[in-house]
Amino acid sequence: MKNLRSAPITANGLSFLVMEDDDFQRRMVVDMVRSLGATEVREADNGKQALDMLQAVNTSPVDIAICDLDMPEMDGMEFLRHLGGKSRSASVVILSALDGMLLASVENMAQAYGIKLLAVIKKPLTLAQLDALIAQYERWEGKPQQAAAAARSFTLEEVLQAVRAKQIEPYFQPKVDLETGRLTGAEALARWIHPELGVIEPGAFIGLLEQHGKIDELTFLMLEKTAAASRVLLDKGYAILLSVNLSLVSLSDTTLADRVTQVVRDAGVDPHHIILEITESAAMTDVAPALENLARLRMRGFGLSIDDYGTGYASMQQLTRVAFSELKIDQSFVKAFTVNPALRIIVESSIKMAHELRLKSVAEGVETEQELVTLKSMRCDTAQGYLISRPIDFNAFCDFLVNYNRKAAALDSRE
Ligand code: C2E
Ligand code: CA
Ligand code: CA
Picture 1: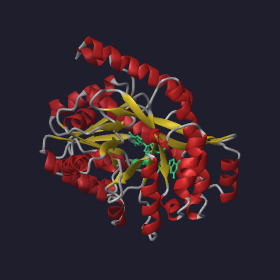
Picture 2 (picture 1 turned 135 degrees about the horizontal axis):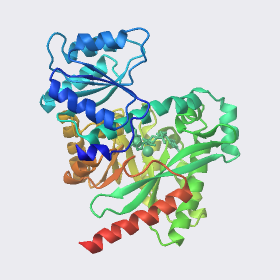
Picture 3 (picture 1 turned 120 degrees about the vertical axis):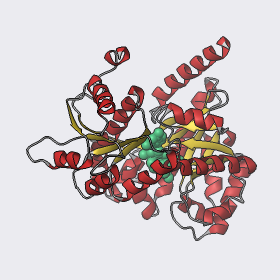
């Protein structure tokens, strides 16, 4: 228990419910939660008791419920069904000794019941796991503020004005080569630096621009700023590949490839240093001009990436005949593949397929060390995700890059 005492106080201010019929195991979990500084820990030895505690009036709400599945009287499954119907309910962590396939189906069931499922963990729970899932909880609960900015809906005029005033900035999220451990690339993600509201995430403005056929204005601003960043990195001696997102709707205009090439060359950058990521977010009608644009971009030397692989429509398959250079496995598969055998199969076969098609495989949304290690063992080429870094502004990215590769070099020389 010694290591518990030196643990960081990460659960400060949070209230927990631990539901477990085995007294010894319950004690262990309760002690761990307390050691992380939980404000309140309630205990139940079956689902019925837990549900009564959650429903009791005049008590403060539970933030995180840690639940065993196999219990007398009311088991975990029934508990989750009842909980799913509640509007303001706790986030749930399922903790069980059952095997992986069964846990995966319970996970699907919990999601179908509308449970805010934080994690499904095979017993025994470790302090590191608990710490990670509290961080995950805070990320989720932190979202409402961001969602508030997103929910403050902007008009098309406001967004266009921001684009024209160049208030949109690329934030860079690092991509790491899993074989060498080096930071070799970054994805540019649009952020609106709003003079009053601060940093606004792309969910609040990209869709609006796309719907009104105005996304190209943003695309070209992002390209211009990203190409300028690329030039700075090249001058510092860093041949980092920078990725820019391209909306599929933009591809129906056959002049696109030339305009994109021009902007990048005007910044003094060869297209080989830029990757264009394309997601299939809507069913595409104009396949022919899209194929023309993509072939031309590839010919000019741009890298082309299939973004959110596995979530798009069938027409993307027509596009896979184009010379894509990279396949990004969607984060919804990466999110839980280490505990969900079905997702693991999808991730592994996507990596295999990428290699057979001679594409680089990239896993996005990598949040845990375990995911990183597993991806490496599956021979995935590149990883991107919060585990490495969130998207950060260009100055922060430059510092991050220098430190990261210095550490990687130090590790290399020790071997
Ligand atoms: P995307 O292209 O799939 O970008 C990845 C998103 O996942 C980013 O969200 C990134 O911050 C987030 N992400 C990265 N790692 C993790 C992780 O470990 N965990 C979790 N939970 N999330 C992670 P962001 O920046 O909010 O962007 C959302 C979407 O907006 C992007 O999804 C992309 O489709 C769109 N977008 C962003 N910038 C642009 C742009 O310049 N042009 C266009 N057309 N679309 C853009
Ligand atoms: Ca992307
Ligand atoms: Ca993506």
